[in-house]
Length: 526
Image (cartoon, rainbow, N blue to C red; front, side):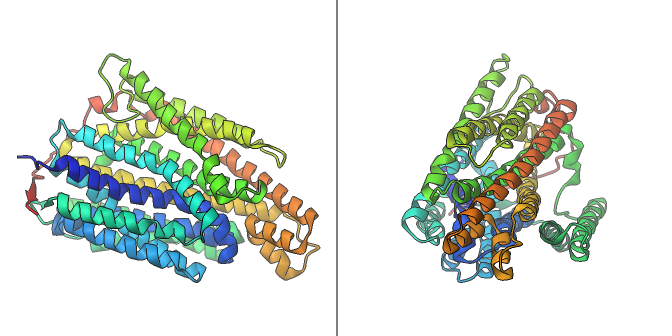
């Protein structure tokens, strides 16, 4: 018998997801402010974002296993408490290092909130109801895109930067009460073991890789420190994969089920979702700095100027959904699902992304907001086409018995893509900016500050009253942004080719044929 209050419980889960979505988007607006308030360099700005994303990616899969073992509701409540505590610590962070640490704790808490919310759906809803529940959670994630920039912009314009983290607290309190009252406890019939070695290898490997990429952008890709961390991280990831295979062959519980990648729909849907995430995170890292450092726009104005991307995303998802439903196979069950031809829908999305980014790569200091709005809308429309359709392709290839672990794996890979998007593209932006901004005529200390970030360069130029330096900083940043956007164009074109060559036309029509075993779930009373 299904839990009678399941739709109210879904509302509680959606509210929890909204907190994570807002926190993931609101920080990008605060980066220019943090660069001056905490005297943060570009690598530190990257770590403000990466600490959250990396911690979340590293813990997504173990969080699912721990929920199966100890109870999903219990861990979800603990994660909400940790999220609120880390939000308070972030709001009052005195240094960049403190903020990076508290952001990592936020990421760990979010890593439990996301997969546990998804896994609970298998207990609350039948196979017929589950698509509607998933759609509601996806819709709440989309809603976070406009709420984050606008709310964050308004807070940064009227209050100090810590308010963008304090806003999490009342929302978390409401979510905590709702989850505690409305959600039943659930856990797996079996209590799986914890793959401690897999958790350690994956976390260490991802951290080392990301640090190596950031260090390479700052000091040079072939410098000993950057090379050591990059190669060491790659070796740890390879060791992690080998360990997971060994666990599977010995019949023990691995952290991830590598057999999931035997499905082309799952594999290429996941890869393409990650490619989209890679480009999107790089864009969200750069565009707010462009509006504020070059355009002189405040945080609220920056948030409002990002709305065209959200508008384009929603329109793109609606159009893609209608095109998918026009195939005569019935409407899509997930926003953006293209039942007619998944690979065409995803490829169209990547082409729109490439077109928008290509236009954006021609930006000059004299370009107005109207020009920026056009290419941002195009990129948003491409995201609306590509991301939901690729996600649906991956999920549609899973059997119900593997939907939980499959969804958690997709989320983990997505977060890795976002982390590396910020690391790689941010490093390219930093390298190009430092190579173009002229500091030879400045005192060493002043020159170092100007080269640290465009926001710091603008602040220095205004303090010393140098219009020439201000113009040089803005010109250098725009040129470096164009270089980064051209790289994103190449990534989008590659995504188009991958979708057309490898993504099955109808991923959901051929589910994985695997030995499902026994994956019973039990819902326990509150």
